[in-house]
Every structure is written in structure tokens, then in C-alpha cells.
Image (spheres, helix red, strand yellow):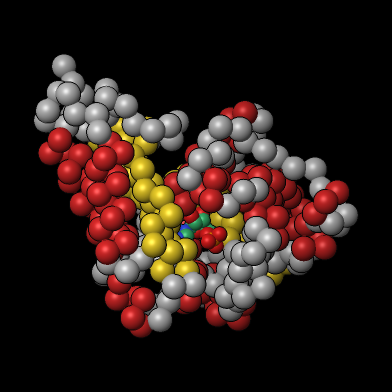
Length: 297
Ligand code: AMP
């Protein structure tokens, strides 16, 4: 039986600071889970992870306008505040912060100081969604300054996002431990996402082709890595892209990269990640998989 306990819901900065300061004065540590709402089991797993590392857990719901491009879905982004509050309360979150855009960006987006994390923000989702990671790093930096957590949990489903946040925290010497949490999936393999609600029944039946082809590519890498001269990562990735398209999706990108730098994989790399994004009807799905290959003697 879930034991719902009292969860504070706070909309303004001064109440948030007051509550967190009181916790700190009692010697309690704070974990933080930033989200854009329409919560699913993936988000809730981040709350559960935060509880393992901190005495108090703060979640936020803020649909951040700075990370949406001009033609993207901010107006139609799914909102379900009542259900979200219930889920967070059941997950024993201690505080839910739900600021408005006016509170986060009082001078408007054009006058807002921003954080741009170089290099790691550039390719993949950074290329397909110009300005996206600037929006993400800016809002996360701002939320970190407001909540002042000891630890913050992010989902590995957004692999590049985790790398961007870790780089920001290191580069700016923020005293926050970033915890990366495994992706929660449907039984079909489809990664849970707030945007999966855009999928029709027919699209839901083909959407698992993304994770299936990432798995296929990982398997091929393991086979090919037995041959010393193998370096045709992009050839294999292109095959996976064709298979994803043949399943009825439209591949945005699929690449094999070094797991930390996200540079295209080279012959002697052993710690890899497959990063992929594909359109399925109105939804743009992203997914990834870490692959460790045996090192070449
Ligand atoms: P979002 O609300 O989409 O901005 O996501 C908020 C946080 O939940 C991010 O750290 C995401 O990476 C994480 N997240 C989203 N989907 C999943 C999932 N399927 N499994 C685990 N974490 C997830």
C-alpha cells in the first residue's frame, strides 16, 4: 500500500527558498527531479532514486519555453497537473515546485542570461533542435540555484541531455551530484515518454522499431568487434536507419558514438553509445543504448 504523505505544492521562489532553508538548518539533504509534467513511470523512478540519495525530494513541473523551437509543440505539449500531483504524492515527493514562465523568465526570453554548454550540445538533438540544449541548460541551472539540491536525478533516455548537464555542473563547479537513471520501457521496448500520447494505435504498433533496431545495431557491433579491422560504424548505422524507415518511421539520426564525448566512434573505442531519433506520426521519439566492446589487445 502506498503511504501518501503531505506534499507541499509551491508556486513562488520565496516559499521554495524558505522551505529548503529550513530543511538545511535541520541538517537534511535535498534531492531534485526536474520534469515538464505529464508524468509516467520513468519520472516516478527518478523520484524513487532521489529518495535513495537524499532526505527530502523536490520535484518540479515546468514546461520550459526556452527549450522549444519555433515550430515545436509547446502549445500542445500534454498537461495533466492533477494526475501528476497525485503520482508525486504517492511517490512520497516532499515538495512540488510549479513556477510560471513569468517567475522563471521575468524579463522574457530575449532578455534572459543563458548557459550554453559547448561541443556536447552540438550534434544529434542539438543539431535537429537548434537552441534546445541552451534552453535545457539555462533552466536547469536556474532551477539548481533555486532548489540548491545535493543531488539531482536525470533519465538516461535523454542521454545527450545527461551529458550536457554533467558538463555544465563540472564546468561551473556546481556542488551537485548528478545521478543518471535507467530508461523505463513499455513491454514492447518503447521508451516511456510524455509525448507517446501523440501516437495513434497504428503508430504505437510500429514505434518499437526504434528500440528494436538500436538493439540490432548493438548486436552487430558486438559481432563485428571480433574483427580487428572493423571501423565501419556509420555503415552499420545506415543499415539500421533504413530498417527503421522500412518499419514506417522516419529516421532523424542514428549514430554510434563514444559514450562520453559523443564524438563519432572510432576503431579503438570500446565504450560506445548508440543515439537515435525518429519521427512517428506527430511524435519525435528518441532512444539510445550503451554498448561496451572488449578492448582490442
Ligand atoms: P521530461 O518531463 O520529458 O523533461 O523528463 C524529465 C526527466 O524524466 C528527464 O530527466 C528525463 O530523462 C526523464 N525521463 C523521461 N522519460 C524517461 C523514461 N522512460 N525512463 C526514465 N527517465 C525518463
